[in-house]
Image 1 (cartoon, rainbow, N blue to C red):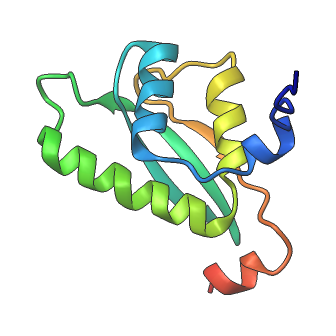
Image 2: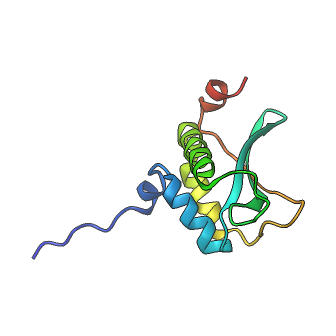
Image 3: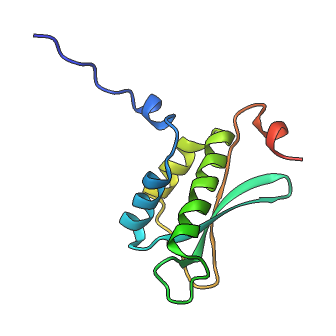
Length: 119
């Protein structure tokens, strides 16, 4: 009897993110669809999990606009080559979004990507 090899965790972590996966991670961790932003400070990119979330009555985006924004952001993260970092961080961080304080992940870009994406 032949057995299929077990998936390599390193190669699984290198798989591109999807907006659906990110949304599921957010909802499973914090039971809310938090707003995400990609920013650059002092030449270094950061992923921020903001304190506002889709389920809030005062959230400024519709569900459709939020989904579009999330798709665009996930595309940028995949383009930067940081899918595994983001997946790991969202799955394991012990911090949680708080009013007025964004959570920050300093992204470690693969060699050569920083020059390609940052001005």
